[in-house]
Length: 401
Image (tube, helix red, strand yellow):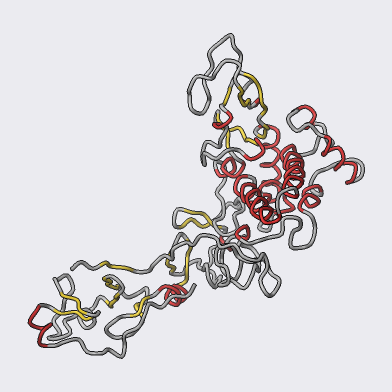
């Protein structure tokens, strides 16, 4: 029989289960963990729940307000320089023709951010649309848009107000990055018609565009560059661009997340762009130095041994506590420092004492063996002479969700 050498396991992801939006304690319910999570308690610098480690967006957050009770639209409005009252700006935004690039460019003073303005206008439309849906569909629709925005247009990339990890020395770099992005890269796709007099191809799929057909144009690449509506996607993640907001770089278009990722590293813990000169690289990811911590207990891991599971680093103690197996022979934990052997649901220390014949005690590592009720035998003779006896040390897999 074959055995598998292991040092840890990965839990299977579960599909969301829909229940009441709030737990008994009145906290947003986790849509992945259901009752296993007592409710959303946001980590103080990670964008996850402290209880279950799922993303904040995996919880049934009410679509109308943030945790501090303010409407998301008002939080965004605070970031846009403007003249006049907030009510006046809201009225102008509601009247705005968002497909008109020139109109959008002048909704506020020249220092405004066109991307935030676009998000605000589309959010207002989205909220009105969601309010018209049946009550049981509203949460799903709001959750879907929130996920799309967070994936492609994270607010902590767009404005300093939403950043938690910037030091005073990094603020200047952030503003320089934002200014360059705003003036040289950010744009909004506009709908147009393919000219009939010449033959044009789609910038993404390279197929011929149908004359007089509907197309999307990104002015940053020139008015003669066209996309099929279904091809107006980020060149990295291949997803349709939310609200047709794109960012130009290297003769192609990106969502904001992957535009930023093509210039700076991104912290795998807090999800913010790293502007510091020094940062940690591990497991093909980047971390702020102060954020390279155990995924479970937040203990700093700089200069310490760690074990990665599902791309997240764990201190040795937490990894053993959460993922280590129990040896079927001796009943002790197979720690991260101890190589283990497994076959089906059974696990052993990879040592001559534990992985040995239950009859004669022969070492069975790298040898053929027979397995009966979790007990190892070197052959039929030992199996018949020494039938399996109850083992007081037999234990099920130790797992902590």
